[in-house]
Image (cartoon, rainbow, N blue to C red; front, side, top):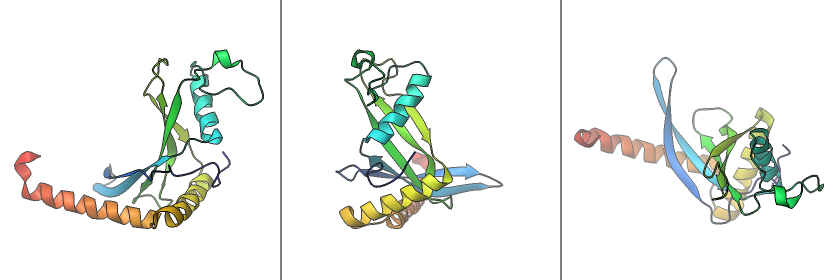
Length: 166
């Protein structure tokens, strides 16, 4: 997938979620995460459609080449796209973009599909996201991860004080 500011764009509302995850290598290791909502683009739509078509579902969007009759598409639906940042991996951007089907007519409505990313794509996506965050929202990928880390620490401290509720 070709990555640039036209193929990857943070949604105009600037929607992101802070969280945390844990991996158990030799011991539990908790790390901050940020999930960022992306705008729907032709590139992302085509990637999600390709995955769904391979699984036997109708695509949401007909290819521009006219290979597919629009009647053979689920053209009332769309995808919600999300990409994750994490404080564990050196590349920071998760290894995939999540595409969630939004179509009440589709058998796989609200099903989540993962669009795999190469290391090069992850590096480029980080650059694009960081630039967009700075230009449009006055923050950065690193600042969002730091906010997620502080929120994770705060939640852990709260849980330690209120053990009976967890």
